[in-house]
Length: 312
Image (cartoon, rainbow, N blue to C red; front, side, top):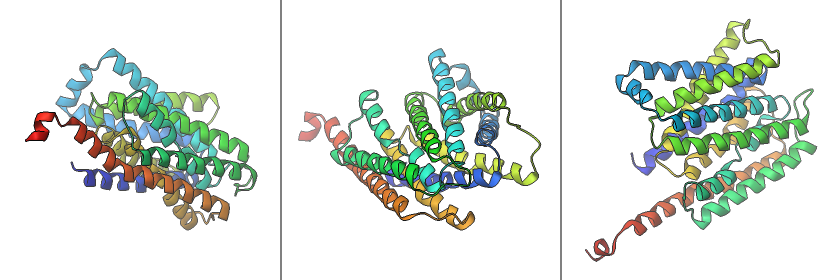
């Protein structure tokens, strides 16, 4: 698959993940409950693919103990990401919550550079810095003067959304490591199942009900698994083996724009001027990261040419 096709897949992933916050709000359930069922339904679908394939079942039997442990930890990080972020939607506007939780490129740039020895262009590193600056300004604005849902606590919203960001950075970092050895279906099936167990346990500890919902609520919870999970996170997990850690995840920072547009249309939730300005700053950083990927790949290919090849 060429670079253009991979970026087209990222566009699809961005659109799909943009629906997540809207579906959570429409479901009307607690964030932990929404996270649990999103993971349960996704795990059932992906594990079903694994069980239906002789090749994938054989791959599961060959998984190394270290990789199995890493996938369980990845599932824990994914559960924390969903639980914390979906809770933040009760305390912040969709635009602010989604933008903050999607601010992980700066963290992943450090991880990719130190752990995976990936080398980024100056444009990509500056872009990650611009994006995180936008997030910092947005966080301050949201905590002091942004739009807040009725009964919301903006400081708690910023804290849970930011913590959810750190968790998803760990989740993608582990995925970059393990995906080089396992198929997308096997990796996501085990990770989603692990995450479902962790999130379900946390939900029950909080005393939140996991059943007894109306049919409409179940429909929204199922769509959470189909659109943003399988059509978003799973696509990103696939691309982790194709693109750099930063390039395969940074474009998802486009989610705040899509989510904000949907929130305006579906929830009639406006975006205040301050939030809009800081979103633009963040998205400018994203564009710089994506634009720098071609230069990064070109530089890597040039370094791979031997002196003999250069002569010929």
